Length: 270
Length: 158
Image (cartoon, rainbow over all chains, first blue to last red):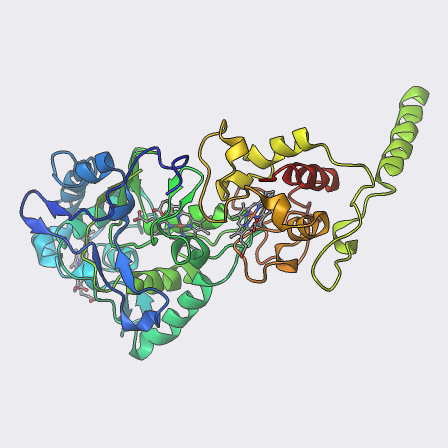
């Protein structure tokens, strides 16, 4: 490392155990479908400073857990014309603990890849008779934080074969496209340069197993698509919209690059 | 009214005069090695202004990716590109100009942006707004800024 860049050191070899007993897989062999582009995959947690890492090791220190509390409230509150809350049908958030590790997922009935956001809005509009929640609205991101939190420790295992394949390939195409006036792709920063500093930023592999993420920089929960937007904007490019087919495909592809890591959200990042 | 018109006429003449010797981005000619031998402006570069371009985030932001010992006073040098210490011992003026104008001239498939190009981009944006660029694109650096950076890089000997 260049001494000039490393103001806050990161312990890239640290292990993540949450609340003293929930062991996370923060590094493991890359899945075969990465075709040798990466040997190992790493959670974004491993690239953060010791202080930021520590915040995620205990739910009392993790600011994102406040939003999980708010998510529980929404989960139990009736909305819409049907008088249902999420709890009416799903009873407890723990019943949704398998969800985070396997989404986005092909939805047979709709004939499209669905993210958790889309699935929640399907329930909100079709089963509760309420207005769809905004893609990165507070209520939506809080519900996603809740669903991630009950899925922590499960191994990410997103399916990319069968009918999801076409969407996955579209996501891969986007991942390797150099966008903007700076002509940089996701791979430029997160595949070729993870572990390196770009200015003061320590680059991770851009994994999404930790989403939603609480960022110390903006002191709120951030959705996957808002992060994608920020990264594309930083190449001096016209971004895609949150919830666009491009970002849904990219989410499936990026999620699949993390197959083998554990669900870690809501996580803490700088 | 008359005075305003007079001024307008004066400035447009001055502007044209200034740009007369400047080679536009699409007109820059590189040789078979990707080098650009001719100055973009005919005005020799100023290394002090080049240093400003190298370190300013809104201009070249070169140290975002490169470590330069002579620029140690500026914080946060990145590691995406190699150190530029001794760059003048490794590269000719023409090669440095060539890579700044269009990184592909010297390094095909490089992470390094092209600083004096206005075409061939995918979804070019309007600065860092995330919105689409409007109208004709401006290069990241002006022709004279490129010359200033070349002059600065030529001071990096070991």
